[in-house]
Image (tube, rainbow, N blue to C red):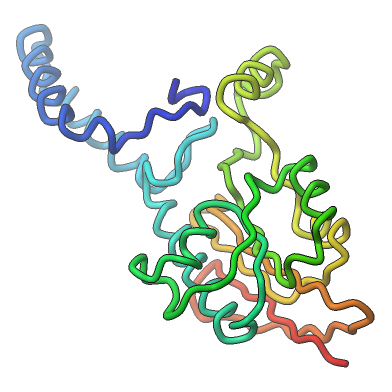
Length: 232
């Protein structure tokens, strides 16, 4: 189930992980004369997987991609709270919880949120029908999609994931902004080892407004911020 993007998350198996490790090492010790090398190879693969994403869909919390995910959402929440503290915000989970639950640590006061399931074409078109209910849209990657998936070239595989596990393709921010009649005012992405971990974008619906955009580079490697402000 985890391979095809199901709901099985690694954290649910944490209580059993020590037992599995003990049994695996015991089996290698009994079956292989070179068991120390085998254990070292497995340990090396385990540590490597912290930094490199697999060629299939997975939960970002399974490796250090989740650190990028949290940092991006923190930056987005800070930008939103500073620029649009009273705005009604359209977004999806988990950003919908991050902007409403103070104990998560992303904001200092709750934001009014209009929640959608994801940023697929169907959900964005549905949101366009009640666009009067929000002023700002927070867009981010709701699923990890590798650039070159090993399995998504097979239609039956994609149909299986779509039917049982809610697989979908998030629309690019520019397309979401166009459908909702908005303008991009903030964009940030983080890349580690040439692999995009996640991205977060804002578009602000301002009828008749003009957009002035400034590029603001950050010092950290692989990070860039596109910040914009609406001018009358």
